[in-house]
Amino acid sequence: MDLSVVIPTYNEKENIVILINNLKKKFNKNRINGEIIIVDDNSPDGTGDLLDYISKKDKKVRVIHRTGKLGLSSAVLAGFKISKSKVLAVMDADLSHPSDSINKMYSLIKDEDVDIVIGSRYVKGGNIVGWGNYRKILSKGATFLARVFTNIKDPMSGFFMIKKECLNGIKINPKGFKILLEIIVKAKYSKIKEVPIIFTNRVHGKSKAGIKEIIYYLRNLSSYIFSHRNLSGKFIKFSLVGLIGTFINLAVLYSFTELLGVYYIFSAILSFFLAASSNFILNKVLTFNESIKYKILSKYYKFLIVSICALIINLAVLYSFTELLGVYYLISQIIAIGFSFILNFIGNKIWTFSN
Ligand SMILES: Nc1nc2c(ncn2[C@@H]2O[C@H](COP(=O)(O)OP(=O)(O)OP(=O)(O)O)[C@@H](O)[C@H]2O)c(=O)[nH]1
Ligand SMILES: [Mg+2]
Image (tube, rainbow, N blue to C red; front, side, top):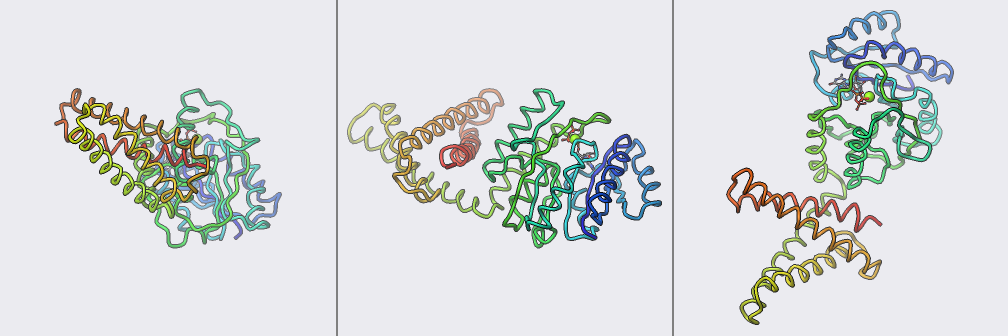
């Protein structure tokens, strides 16, 4: 077997037969010995029965039935587990992903030894057809946040191919909707490539991406900071630098106010800038491994802007928790510091120190 295509389904009766036929045509045309593994979560619309009927006649179509809607990532993992080939593909059932790209993606892995190939909406030549502004903004926002972890243009794509060996020994969180991003963060690979695809919005059936998926996404995203190969170290260094900055801030505030008799609000402004400047230099050199001189001024401005935004967010969270939710103000401040600290890290990683 050359290739195992894993397709999770939940209420995709109108789409799945068309997709299976399209894929089989592509396999035949390009002489790919492929199997199709469909993981159905007891779809109320009868997708599972239809699949049983198809798989009885065609041994290359295999079906996994699960008891109920258990989530997208775990469905993909269940498919991977029973796959018989060394190359795995994942695609949605709703015809959003073009079967035409399968051959191109497979030949990149087979002939050019690429480890992961992504069907990408956001590289040149790629596009999305049929999405409203809300979906576009949501997708762009989620992709932007993912830039903390990767420079891949479309790490949220549901269409990709990967050598099975890249997944050896890694643990994927089954509670997620975007398994590719997690694979990019955790898997072992050296060559990764994006091929442009035209993504067409589903014609039949309903979308399953909702608020629950967004919340899981944000939670998973913060957990990746600790499992990412380089990032956890950077995050720890960034935290230590932040701690040093806090001491500098307090020391300057105390000295100017108590020893030099400066009005404490002025001392506080001064201490903010001094601590931010020392944080900037330490993070530039120690956390992000840059030389001191490289683009020092423009990066300093960016760092200050991120710091000020983080401060504003700190104050906004402090105010909201204390005034609107009635939380004790010191507890609110601990929560606020946590929020603004993570945003500070993300802002600097994505923007200030991105090049
Ligand atoms: N087995 C299984 N499949 C799921 C589950 N949630 C979604 N799917 C399938 O995963 C694929 C992607 O889900 P979609 O609803 O298309 O998500 P999306 O592409 O982000 O959103 P739309 O294209 O707007 O519908 C589709 O094939 C779904 O049928 C689930 O909990 N279990
Ligand atoms: Mg879809």
